[in-house]
Length: 241
Ligand code: BV8
Ligand code: ZN
Image (cartoon, rainbow, N blue to C red; front, side, top):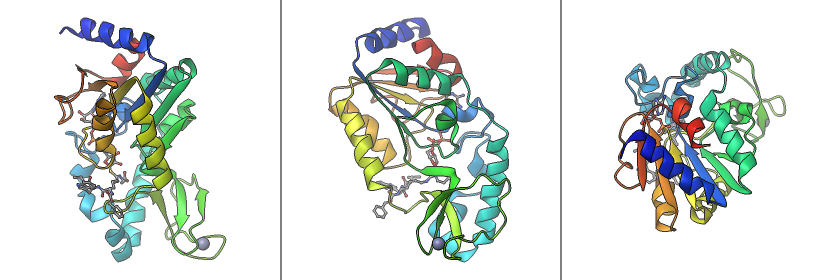
């Protein structure tokens, strides 16, 4: 099917939909200049996820982990939402039943104006106290290392879900509900390898949704969706409106 035909089919499905759910990954922020995780310019290229985005790494060397997150804060602070983020905000306005599920921690979706969203893996602009659990927003670039809790003096960590850590149950429940109740699910810019986020598209499909993937490269999900459209999220997402 040509690109034009695929976009036409996706638009037709969206026109008749009452409820739409969107799932995004790092590919939706790539055109804002934020490197993805597993692509050629991937974030993990210089670091291995296992070395840094884990509770053990933070336990072992919190300074190294905070240095890595400061590097990402500086990177992200210089970026802005792109046309893909804006198009998703427009969808939130158009559909009475709308939910956005993002795996991204860069905060570009709320910055663009998305409100009906779950940040499944947390948000780089929030910190959590390892002692009292208080979560606060902190936009220092860089954040002074090692940051301590104003409330109790405990060590602060990024409010981000690391590998081996459980996702927030409410976020997961809300996301599963949004996957099961939508007529159309858009999967945009994710390699579909990280669980449990990667289980949401099959869940939507099994619940009868028409699932559309927009991604630069084929992914393990490409064969399982109803429509797989290859291209840049910032180019294709606005063309779905
Ligand atoms: C958990 C935080 C259990 C760090 C991240 C089976 C079931 C359950 C768990 C597992 C399982 N198998 C393995 C696991 C463990 C693990 C996992 O899934 N591992 C994978 C690697 C195999 N899962 C976990 O550990 C999760 N926790 O399950 O805990 C548990 C339960 C109860 C009690 C205790 C424990 C936690 C997962 C969260 C991990 N945290 N990040 C940080 O970000 O600082 S994951 C990390 O990968 C990022 O958050 C990112 O969001 C996520 C997914 O990556 P993508 O967004 O897809 O990015 P990627 O680069 O991979 O792909 C980008 C895509 O975009 C590419 O396809 C590319 O082609 C495309 N693209 C590029 N440019 C563009 C584009 N597309 C469009 N336009 C463009 N311009
Ligand atoms: Zn505290």
